[in-house]
Image (tube, rainbow, N blue to C red):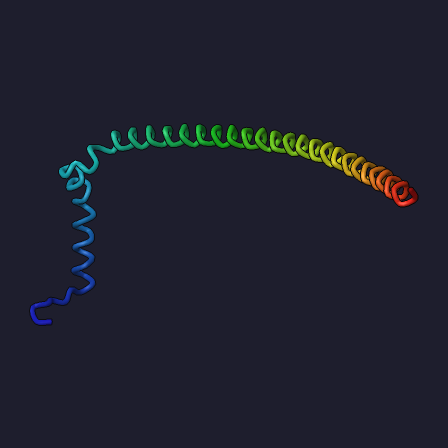
Length: 121
């Protein structure tokens, strides 16, 4: 810690006042802020652009929400159509099953009759 100097509060106060007094001049010299009026105009333009961007984003979100609702409606309609077709095919296969059972019964009776006729002859 050799070579380090302690600074008392009074000296720090003087340094703070000096920096505070000269900071605007240093900022202009470094082109950080050309002048307060230019900075305010630039800030105002940026604020307006940000407000405009926020409004555009809100409109975009509203449009996306509408698109999602339309997509949901489309999926619901397709689901209804699928259910209708599924019920129709279920009825078709139920009818086909009944027909096959009837056909099997008739065939069994017919073959039984033939076998009885053959056995009796």
